[in-house]
Length: 100
Image 1: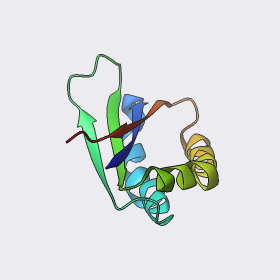
Image 2 (image 1 turned 120 degrees about the vertical axis):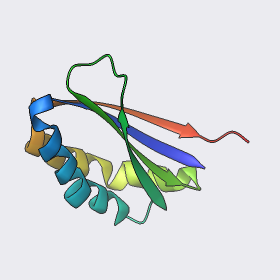
Image 3 (image 1 turned 45 degrees about the vertical axis):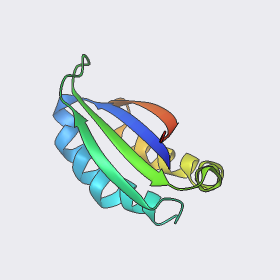
């Protein structure tokens, strides 16, 4: 299983608005690409960062589906996110695979 992880550090004053927007806009848009089979939202409880830290993990069985997402959809989603929350977040991405 391939996991695309987006870790967001969000200003404390924007975290409620951000989480609602992610649930209503960003995540549904990512899932509508049909590149992922499931997702989960995690909040990091012991983050050393100021503000709230969240991970959104999208899962797909094939690396090629992630590559399709990256090449055809990722930039537009990040632009929309940046327009909505400019200067109120930091984003880190990573690609992982499960190990049996």
